[in-house]
Image 1 (cartoon, helix red, strand yellow):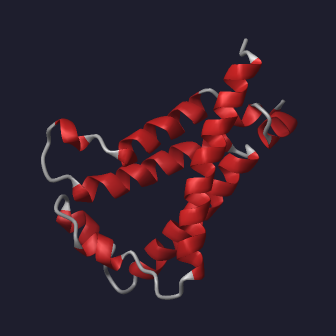
Image 2 (image 1 turned 30 degrees about the horizontal axis):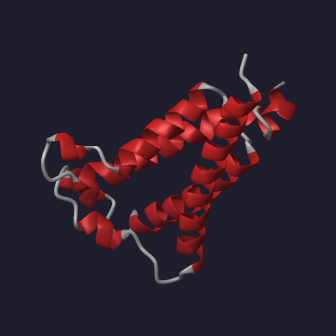
Image 3 (image 1 turned 135 degrees about the horizontal axis):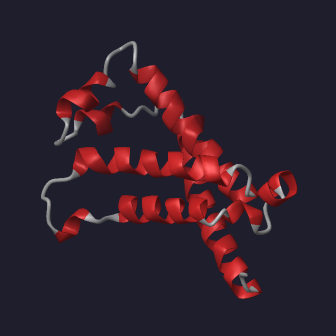
Length: 140
């Protein structure tokens, strides 16, 4: 059984991460010039994998999924709606942001992307949408 303080802290983490993703996603959605091409072309790891996403037929799909994925994830977290589904997908997105930029495999390899991924997996694991969110109304 969670205390009110624990539930509030879960809500705070959920809202904070939700705002980060919503803001980032909307920034991309509302900027017609935004593309992930610069990020993908700068990959230093798994270059073959990430260069696949740079193909003319694939890049628009990647850009759409990236921008709208972040926006929908942000809304999901803020509203507490389908958090057990959206949060692991958000963690996967964070890993996909993290992988191409790793330069050395030492202690500095843990950056904000890993922290966000871990926090998202935690929110999914505890069913954070059940605490003052729509998941409780929908799934009980």
